[in-house]
Image (tube, rainbow, N blue to C red; front, side):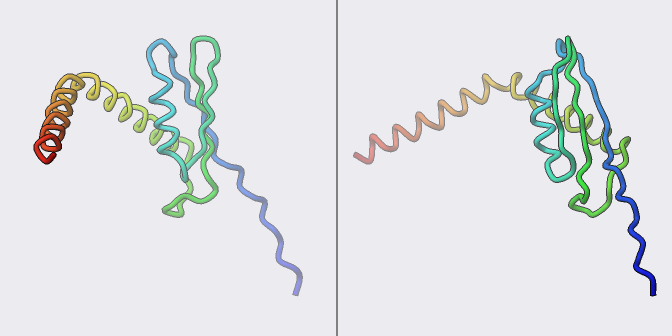
Length: 116
C-alpha cells in the first residue's frame, strides 16, 4: 500500500480592515481584538491617519469551523461597533454611576462608623 499523500496545508484566512484614526479610538480596536482571542489574531498598526488591523484566523476555532475572510471581517466590525457603543454608554452614564458609587461607599462608611 503506498504511503498516504500529504495534502497541502490550507493557508490561513487573512483580512485587513482599516479605520480613520480621527474617528475610531484605538481602545475600541484593542478591546475588539482582545475579544477575538481564540478565533483570530489581530495586529493593529498606525499608517498615517489610518489604523490598519490585520486579522489572521486561528487554525481551529472554538466551534471547530474555520471562518471565511468575510465572516472574520464582519465579526471584527461587529465587535468594534459594540466597543464603540459601550464607550458612548459609559460616557453618557458616568455622572449617574459616580452618584451611585458615592452613595454606596458613603453608606458603607456610615455603617462601619456605626459598628465602631
